[in-house]
Length: 352
Image (cartoon, rainbow, N blue to C red; front, side):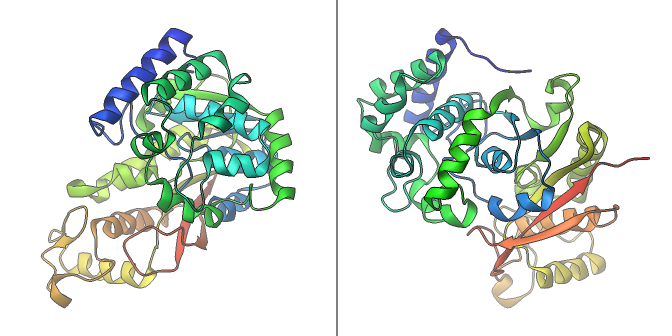
């Protein structure tokens, strides 16, 4: 279901966002939650592996960077899905800023490679008149609520801007130089962005009827589906079955789906986890940081984590299917091992 807020709804969204931010957010992943200003995966390296003939694409909302990378390669209609309904206001702001601002102003306004502070009100005023009315109402209200203090907005509304900003050119290339930026700017201006308010497992009910996609990008959604104390093979199987039964049929004939992104995936650790599970399949109880019950160096060492066990289950299950492309990328700077590469899984439409 496409979310197209009225001005009154946008103001209400901004009031809720402000209240949540002042309370340090009741949920970091919910209907209202902090924004990502930059992607956390090496988008610039896996998108080319998905093909060259994009027109219509479905991708996670978040920072919007995945959609921008698809636009760079020809996509014209981008459907962003996101549980965080306020994200539509960030995406709309980012689109207008990218269409309007010179490269340096855009980077100062929304990237902040060095100083870790974004949303300068002086730069906001340069794009304000071109914003859609609901988007303008949302951000006008937030600036007023924060008393035009963009440093406070950066800290309270966004996720670790300074940390992500330092990794910005590892994950993206659209602002790496003038040629890339202004080429992307023209393409973004010609594109249409649509917003679907939806959790992942609700996409079967919320995707617009009659639309197929040349590309689907699921980012690191799997990370939040199979995480913490509930890591299991069953969660990995459920995730892949949903992709197979619901999303892959929505691809065009030559379409592709980036079905999962794994941070610092270490194949040696993966093999060792496989051996541990083979000898004691019921002995691994995961947590967000460590796997309990390991009698290894001081009970744990880098890489033996709930994250990596979740990765193992996905890797093992997806490898059983046909035609899965495993694309290694430069590590984006996250993950719980010492590996220097991340991994993206690319799947094609299954044609019987």
